[in-house]
Image 1 (tube, rainbow, N blue to C red):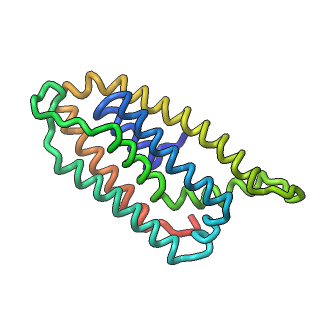
Image 2 (image 1 turned 180 degrees about the vertical axis):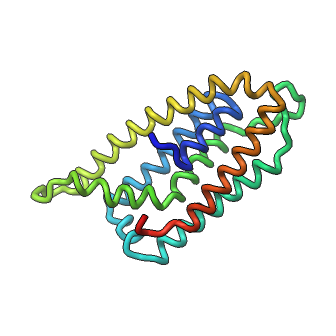
Length: 192
């Protein structure tokens, strides 16, 4: 429930284009998180934990993508929903961006690698199934909490999208938040 890059992306999309866009970003992000669950279950996230190069590649790709989203947000002109040239992103595009933001978050992979094994029965012969089950539970909970963020931000976003002053502030906050998260991700160490 702690707002990180994915939650901030979901809130920004919800405020920008409403509930359906927020929910599309939730579905994309959770599909991205499902990749991390599968990676943990198959042992691939152990590579990220043990390989500095693999961790750095994913970290810098994720950081670059967040910075790209931030710069793009700052360069986008402010338009209200009544503006005749207001361009809405397709739900497919929003879904894809949510997926990319989640997949390129190496801390999620490390979270699954560090967190899920604590709840695995070492005497069991099927640790993979246990990790998949726990990951599925986490995905359901994340989908519920992220959807609440999307619905709340989407509800508030309706009147916010009609205010040019708010839209300018929102564009600046969104842009600088993505850039800050990208720079923070770039300087994140594997031990944190």
